[in-house]
Length: 267
Ligand SMILES: [Zn+2]
Image (cartoon, rainbow, N blue to C red; front, side, top):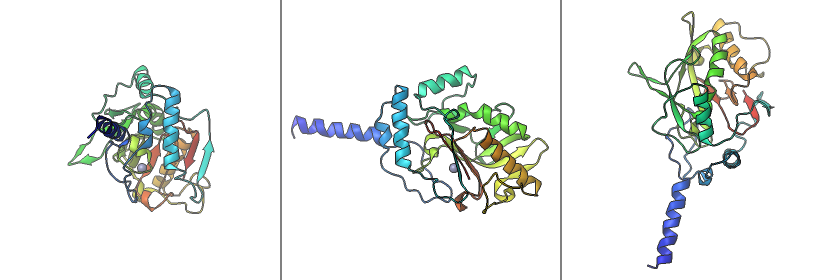
Protein backbone atom coordinates (compact mmCIF):
# COMPACT_ATOMS: atom_id res chain seq x y z
CA UNK A 1 0.00 0.00 0.00
CA UNK A 2 1.45 3.33 -1.01
CA UNK A 3 1.95 6.27 1.29
CA UNK A 4 -0.36 8.41 -0.92
CA UNK A 5 -3.12 5.83 -0.66
CA UNK A 6 -2.87 5.68 3.11
CA UNK A 7 -2.81 9.43 3.35
CA UNK A 8 -5.91 9.64 1.10
CA UNK A 9 -7.71 7.06 3.24
CA UNK A 10 -6.81 8.93 6.42
CA UNK A 11 -8.14 12.17 4.91
CA UNK A 12 -11.40 10.46 3.93
CA UNK A 13 -11.85 9.15 7.47
CA UNK A 14 -11.09 12.59 8.90
CA UNK A 15 -13.66 14.19 6.57
CA UNK A 16 -16.30 11.62 7.52
CA UNK A 17 -15.67 12.33 11.18
CA UNK A 18 -16.51 16.00 10.58
CA UNK A 19 -19.87 15.36 8.95
CA UNK A 20 -21.17 12.41 10.94
CA UNK A 21 -23.83 13.45 13.43
CA UNK A 22 -23.16 12.80 17.07
CA UNK A 23 -26.14 14.40 18.75
CA UNK A 24 -28.61 12.31 20.68
CA UNK A 25 -30.89 9.85 18.91
CA UNK A 26 -34.66 9.63 19.02
CA UNK A 27 -37.77 10.30 17.01
CA UNK A 28 -40.25 13.12 16.78
CA UNK A 29 -43.49 11.78 18.31
CA UNK A 30 -45.60 10.44 15.48
CA UNK A 31 -42.95 11.26 12.92
CA UNK A 32 -41.50 8.96 10.31
CA UNK A 33 -38.01 10.43 10.22
CA UNK A 34 -35.06 8.21 9.52
CA UNK A 35 -31.62 9.33 10.51
CA UNK A 36 -29.37 10.49 7.67
CA UNK A 37 -25.79 9.29 7.85
CA UNK A 38 -24.28 12.71 7.38
CA UNK A 39 -24.78 16.35 8.29
CA UNK A 40 -23.19 18.56 5.60
CA UNK A 41 -23.03 21.72 7.73
CA UNK A 42 -20.71 20.00 10.17
CA UNK A 43 -17.90 20.45 7.66
CA UNK A 44 -18.08 24.24 8.17
CA UNK A 45 -15.73 25.52 10.86
CA UNK A 46 -17.83 28.20 12.49
CA UNK A 47 -15.57 30.99 13.70
CA UNK A 48 -17.30 34.11 12.39
CA UNK A 49 -20.87 35.29 11.85
CA UNK A 50 -20.38 34.64 8.10
CA UNK A 51 -19.43 31.02 8.84
CA UNK A 52 -22.48 30.65 11.07
CA UNK A 53 -24.77 32.09 8.41
CA UNK A 54 -23.31 29.68 5.87
CA UNK A 55 -23.75 26.68 8.17
CA UNK A 56 -27.32 27.54 9.19
CA UNK A 57 -28.12 28.20 5.51
CA UNK A 58 -26.97 24.63 4.80
CA UNK A 59 -29.29 23.40 7.55
CA UNK A 60 -32.22 25.25 5.95
CA UNK A 61 -31.37 23.85 2.51
CA UNK A 62 -31.19 20.36 3.96
CA UNK A 63 -34.42 20.70 5.91
CA UNK A 64 -36.29 22.35 3.01
CA UNK A 65 -39.62 24.04 3.56
CA UNK A 66 -40.75 21.35 5.95
CA UNK A 67 -43.69 23.36 7.23
CA UNK A 68 -45.03 24.51 3.89
CA UNK A 69 -48.40 23.33 2.74
CA UNK A 70 -50.42 23.02 5.93
CA UNK A 71 -53.88 24.49 5.77
CA UNK A 72 -54.38 27.67 7.81
CA UNK A 73 -50.69 27.99 8.61
CA UNK A 74 -49.21 31.46 9.06
CA UNK A 75 -45.75 32.59 7.93
CA UNK A 76 -44.45 36.01 8.83
CA UNK A 77 -41.08 37.48 7.84
CA UNK A 78 -39.64 39.73 10.53
CA UNK A 79 -36.04 40.83 10.06
CA UNK A 80 -35.82 42.62 13.39
CA UNK A 81 -37.06 39.74 15.51
CA UNK A 82 -35.03 36.95 13.94
CA UNK A 83 -32.66 34.90 16.07
CA UNK A 84 -29.10 35.54 14.93
CA UNK A 85 -26.69 33.11 13.33
CA UNK A 86 -23.35 33.42 15.13
CA UNK A 87 -20.54 31.38 16.61
CA UNK A 88 -21.36 29.43 19.74
CA UNK A 89 -18.87 31.35 21.83
CA UNK A 90 -20.83 34.56 21.15
CA UNK A 91 -24.04 32.97 22.37
CA UNK A 92 -22.37 31.55 25.48
CA UNK A 93 -20.85 34.96 26.22
CA UNK A 94 -24.29 36.59 25.99
CA UNK A 95 -25.74 33.97 28.35
CA UNK A 96 -23.09 34.94 30.87
CA UNK A 97 -23.69 38.68 30.32
CA UNK A 98 -27.38 38.12 30.95
CA UNK A 99 -26.56 36.39 34.23
CA UNK A 100 -27.85 33.04 33.00
CA UNK A 101 -25.21 30.80 34.52
CA UNK A 102 -26.56 27.52 33.20
CA UNK A 103 -23.85 24.83 33.37
CA UNK A 104 -22.71 23.26 30.10
CA UNK A 105 -24.21 19.82 29.51
CA UNK A 106 -21.91 16.89 28.86
CA UNK A 107 -23.21 16.28 25.40
CA UNK A 108 -23.70 18.83 22.72
CA UNK A 109 -23.44 19.63 19.07
CA UNK A 110 -20.95 21.79 17.29
CA UNK A 111 -23.82 23.93 16.04
CA UNK A 112 -25.43 24.54 19.39
CA UNK A 113 -23.77 23.83 22.72
CA UNK A 114 -26.14 22.38 25.24
CA UNK A 115 -26.67 23.87 28.65
CA UNK A 116 -28.54 22.44 31.61
CA UNK A 117 -31.45 24.42 32.90
CA UNK A 118 -32.43 23.78 36.48
CA UNK A 119 -34.26 26.08 38.80
CA UNK A 120 -36.75 28.75 37.87
CA UNK A 121 -36.18 31.39 35.19
CA UNK A 122 -38.08 34.64 35.83
CA UNK A 123 -40.42 32.75 38.13
CA UNK A 124 -41.15 29.87 35.74
CA UNK A 125 -39.78 26.38 36.35
CA UNK A 126 -39.02 24.36 33.23
CA UNK A 127 -38.78 20.66 33.96
CA UNK A 128 -37.66 17.80 31.77
CA UNK A 129 -39.35 14.43 31.54
CA UNK A 130 -40.31 12.94 34.86
CA UNK A 131 -39.05 9.39 35.41
CA UNK A 132 -39.79 7.52 38.63
CA UNK A 133 -40.91 10.78 40.18
CA UNK A 134 -37.67 12.60 39.36
CA UNK A 135 -37.51 15.28 36.66
CA UNK A 136 -34.60 14.90 34.26
CA UNK A 137 -32.44 17.99 33.82
CA UNK A 138 -33.52 20.03 30.85
CA UNK A 139 -30.80 20.35 28.22
CA UNK A 140 -31.24 23.16 25.73
CA UNK A 141 -29.18 24.64 22.94
CA UNK A 142 -27.64 27.99 23.80
CA UNK A 143 -29.81 30.17 21.52
CA UNK A 144 -32.99 28.69 22.97
CA UNK A 145 -31.71 28.93 26.55
CA UNK A 146 -30.95 32.60 25.89
CA UNK A 147 -34.62 33.20 25.05
CA UNK A 148 -35.95 31.56 28.20
CA UNK A 149 -36.31 34.82 30.19
CA UNK A 150 -38.44 36.39 27.43
CA UNK A 151 -40.43 33.18 27.11
CA UNK A 152 -40.88 33.03 30.88
CA UNK A 153 -42.10 36.63 31.07
CA UNK A 154 -44.85 35.90 28.53
CA UNK A 155 -45.79 32.75 30.44
CA UNK A 156 -45.86 34.61 33.76
CA UNK A 157 -48.29 37.14 32.27
CA UNK A 158 -50.58 34.18 31.65
CA UNK A 159 -50.10 32.93 35.22
CA UNK A 160 -47.90 29.95 34.31
CA UNK A 161 -45.47 28.74 36.98
CA UNK A 162 -44.32 25.35 35.65
CA UNK A 163 -43.72 24.02 32.15
CA UNK A 164 -43.29 20.29 31.57
CA UNK A 165 -41.12 19.70 28.53
CA UNK A 166 -40.35 16.48 26.65
CA UNK A 167 -36.79 15.64 25.64
CA UNK A 168 -35.65 18.75 23.75
CA UNK A 169 -32.35 17.59 22.23
CA UNK A 170 -32.74 14.47 20.20
CA UNK A 171 -31.86 13.26 16.77
CA UNK A 172 -34.56 13.77 14.17
CA UNK A 173 -34.02 14.22 10.47
CA UNK A 174 -35.50 17.64 9.75
CA UNK A 175 -36.10 19.27 13.07
CA UNK A 176 -34.35 21.77 15.29
CA UNK A 177 -34.50 19.17 18.06
CA UNK A 178 -31.24 18.02 16.47
CA UNK A 179 -29.60 21.11 17.89
CA UNK A 180 -31.47 21.31 21.18
CA UNK A 181 -33.20 24.36 19.75
CA UNK A 182 -36.73 22.96 19.96
CA UNK A 183 -38.81 21.75 22.79
CA UNK A 184 -42.10 19.98 23.13
CA UNK A 185 -44.41 21.16 25.88
CA UNK A 186 -46.95 18.70 27.23
CA UNK A 187 -48.26 20.37 30.40
CA UNK A 188 -48.35 23.77 32.03
CA UNK A 189 -49.22 24.51 35.65
CA UNK A 190 -50.82 27.78 36.67
CA UNK A 191 -50.49 29.77 39.89
CA UNK A 192 -53.91 28.61 41.08
CA UNK A 193 -52.85 24.98 40.83
CA UNK A 194 -54.65 24.25 37.56
CA UNK A 195 -52.78 21.88 35.24
CA UNK A 196 -53.30 22.43 31.53
CA UNK A 197 -52.70 19.22 29.58
CA UNK A 198 -52.22 19.93 25.88
CA UNK A 199 -53.51 16.48 24.88
CA UNK A 200 -56.78 16.88 26.78
CA UNK A 201 -57.39 20.59 26.93
CA UNK A 202 -56.31 22.06 23.60
CA UNK A 203 -59.34 22.74 21.40
CA UNK A 204 -58.66 22.05 17.71
CA UNK A 205 -59.45 24.67 15.10
CA UNK A 206 -59.18 22.69 11.85
CA UNK A 207 -60.93 25.34 9.75
CA UNK A 208 -59.25 28.50 10.96
CA UNK A 209 -55.86 29.98 11.72
CA UNK A 210 -54.77 29.08 15.25
CA UNK A 211 -55.02 32.61 16.64
CA UNK A 212 -58.01 33.79 14.56
CA UNK A 213 -61.63 33.90 15.61
CA UNK A 214 -63.21 33.46 19.01
CA UNK A 215 -61.29 31.58 21.70
CA UNK A 216 -62.62 28.21 22.86
CA UNK A 217 -65.36 28.32 25.48
CA UNK A 218 -63.68 25.96 27.94
CA UNK A 219 -61.34 27.89 30.25
CA UNK A 220 -58.40 25.48 29.87
CA UNK A 221 -58.66 25.51 26.06
CA UNK A 222 -58.89 29.29 26.02
CA UNK A 223 -55.83 29.57 28.27
CA UNK A 224 -53.72 27.24 26.10
CA UNK A 225 -54.61 29.23 23.01
CA UNK A 226 -53.90 32.49 24.81
CA UNK A 227 -50.41 31.24 25.73
CA UNK A 228 -49.55 29.99 22.23
CA UNK A 229 -50.80 33.20 20.63
CA UNK A 230 -49.00 35.47 23.11
CA UNK A 231 -45.70 33.69 22.30
CA UNK A 232 -46.49 34.13 18.62
CA UNK A 233 -47.36 37.82 18.94
CA UNK A 234 -44.20 38.54 20.91
CA UNK A 235 -41.99 36.68 18.35
CA UNK A 236 -40.25 34.85 21.16
CA UNK A 237 -39.92 31.71 19.05
CA UNK A 238 -39.42 31.00 15.37
CA UNK A 239 -42.04 28.25 15.40
CA UNK A 240 -45.21 27.87 17.42
CA UNK A 241 -46.91 24.60 16.60
CA UNK A 242 -50.05 23.42 18.38
CA UNK A 243 -52.10 20.24 17.94
CA UNK A 244 -53.72 22.05 14.98
CA UNK A 245 -50.59 21.13 13.01
CA UNK A 246 -51.03 17.36 12.67
CA UNK A 247 -51.72 14.10 14.47
CA UNK A 248 -48.04 13.80 15.41
CA UNK A 249 -48.46 16.92 17.55
CA UNK A 250 -51.82 16.02 19.10
CA UNK A 251 -50.42 16.03 22.63
CA UNK A 252 -47.87 18.85 22.71
CA UNK A 253 -46.81 22.31 21.61
CA UNK A 254 -43.59 22.39 19.56
CA UNK A 255 -41.59 25.58 20.06
CA UNK A 256 -38.29 26.25 18.33
CA UNK A 257 -35.67 28.87 17.53
CA UNK A 258 -34.00 28.86 14.10
CA UNK A 259 -30.81 30.94 14.00
CA UNK A 260 -30.38 33.13 10.94
CA UNK A 261 -33.94 32.52 9.72
CA UNK A 262 -36.19 35.58 9.50
CA UNK A 263 -39.35 33.51 8.96
CA UNK A 264 -41.77 32.87 11.79
CA UNK A 265 -44.29 30.06 11.65
CA UNK A 266 -47.59 29.41 13.40
CA UNK A 267 -50.07 26.59 13.11
ZN1 LIG B 1 -41.06 18.97 18.59
